[in-house]
Amino acid sequence: MKAVRTIGIVNGGGDAPGLNAVIRAVVRAAISEHGMRVIGIRNGFDGLIWPEGAKEMTEETVSGILPRGGTILGTTNRGNPFAYKTKENGVETVHDYSSLCIDNARRLGIDAIVVIGGDGTQHIARDFHRRGVNVVGVPKTIDNDLDATEVTFGFDTALVIATEAVDRLHTTAESHHRVMLIELMGRDAGWIALHAGIAGGAHIILIPEIPFKFECICDAVRARELRGKRFSLIVVAEGVKLPETDPFGKPIPPAGPGNVANTIAFTLREMLHKEIRVTVLGHVQRGGSPTPFDRILGTRLGVAATDLVAKHHFGRMVCLRSGRIESVSLDEALEKMKYVDPHSEIVHAARAVGATFGDSA
Ligand code: F6P
Image (cartoon, rainbow, N blue to C red; front, side):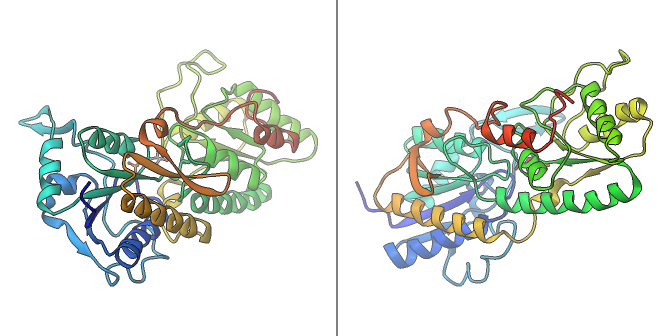
């Protein structure tokens, strides 16, 4: 096989703190360890459909980016080049731009691509690999829902932000004797909510993996009041599943990220007759400087991905397992997502220290 002289680097999906650490690591390791060139592809795979923004990256390009949030490459969580949706005259059309991407990568002189992203982006990487493109994946998501890796970079930073928010709500909730809900990110999995709930000492934690009942939440709030605790903190994962009807038999309107905690609060107000406030933390969890953990993990993953490229070990994704950086095939990496196991030790620990998941008081 012809030696890899030029690596393309692309990130897709929502940004995650630590992305710049990965980019910096790939660029530095590729140049100094392997004598390769690196081309930065802008705004996810869109940058291979429209490659005008692609640029060679140097030590200078990545200087000073380690503590920076976001991604210097720009990103998008829309647009799969294999099924790219556009609107033409108000009608949605779907294009397969994959061949165009492959041609453009070739024109840019790219021999292999490091693809940083979550499950959606890694699916695209896998599909390019099936079309003969040399790819290596790096797992990324604040949601921490990729099964092949113990933890994804970005999760730790999101958790720090979320925990600080829970701590801050604690003091104001206690002072005002209120029920406070905080909605945290996690589109399909409850990892951020579970961890921030435990770290912040939340009283009730609602996650997609454990169905809740309004009555159980109210019982838990009332039980606290009987113990003289006139406030309660409820952490809500944005992906939590709402019951179809409230306890009065009224249909609950469909709700998703951004308004799920408000929807829950609406019913709780009717049931508890207490002052209830809602905070939706949103993208604050994704922005800003990464924690040392995420910088280090991003660096290790970036270097490991570059080493795999140098060894021509393509179609693989680097990952963290038992504290070591390893790799798995992209097929294996995408086999299943990682959800909170309701019977796991960590859920047991949360319950043992007094939290409820809305499934019992
Ligand atoms: O990247 C994951 C994530 O932050 C989810 O937690 C969240 O549901 C989603 O992205 C938000 O996406 P957007 O940035 O499009 O609002």
